[in-house]
Image 1 (cartoon, rainbow, N blue to C red):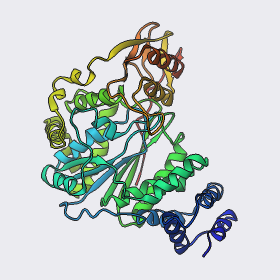
Image 2: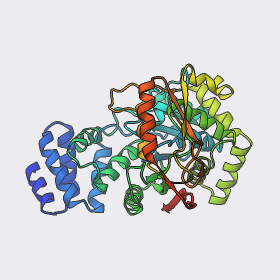
Image 3: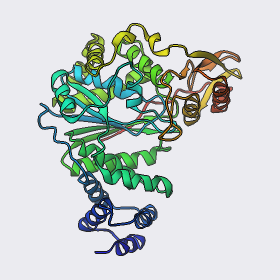
Image 4: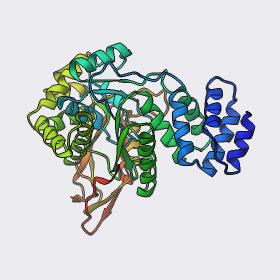
Length: 433
């Protein structure tokens, strides 16, 4: 078998067999296929696409390109959640303790943020002392003892994805849906869970900008899970405005605590509860109504908040901030941001809002960038809200005046004002199961 023949076959619109796909992934990971040939193959896929069967074979070949986690020593059904990423997306930090408080084990591997989207690991590391570097045995032991553990990604998982993504990023082939689906699902399957709840973000602050694109990706990922013998469903959630009010790592952790106390923003609370209900339905093998009753009970009686505190302590974090949130924001300056017109907020360019937070130092422009956990934004107004000129839209948390000025310019460009009332966007746009 020769790589050049596989490139030509895909270039001409042919369908690759399981053996051919396993060959090209295996040989690429072993270093026998050079980057330039894999880049040519990725471009052929970008133009000719892959069938559902090809995407499944690619996913499984990537899954088994490295270590595959065996979670059999964790009792019960293991349910994982994945978000495609967005601005203010802090759902894992909230729903994981809710689900664990309901008796479902949460063994979660999460990543860091890059660009305008935040990462769960960055958020958790805003908590003083919190350790995200758990080895496999520690991770499993903690899940069995308290029902929850969240750690950074295992470098031995899915090495094929790391090598292929590096090429996709520099060859303009990132957007191909079969490559996106195989990248996400290979990592999920290799992590060893039995079922998956996927949160596919849609809109200006998301990777998938339109609902049809998001539906296509969601359906493909759910089918890959089903062909792998796993349960899965995908929620399509709105990212045409930031989720919740806060954007920035420490600010988002504070908002997570407020939400677990029952005092968080309505949009963030509703999405977290909806995802948690589905995770508990799968993990406890109960009906949706039973799962809903259990989730609401554990949320409202603060069992989930107590589970969060237990989780933070277990991973070395100082829980003093739960009662004194200002401890996470030491020495940061605060600048109000004002409306520039009367009317209603008609549209928020969410990606630009994420970029403003990144300019302040809350996100990474490159993988080597250093994050300042205390900086970011808090929004007091969102799409559909009425505003008066010079009314406060939000606050910038910053350290450097120059960065604050640049962020403010971006924010002012990111808001459109309407002279007529605007309906607030729907949060959950669709569910694919």
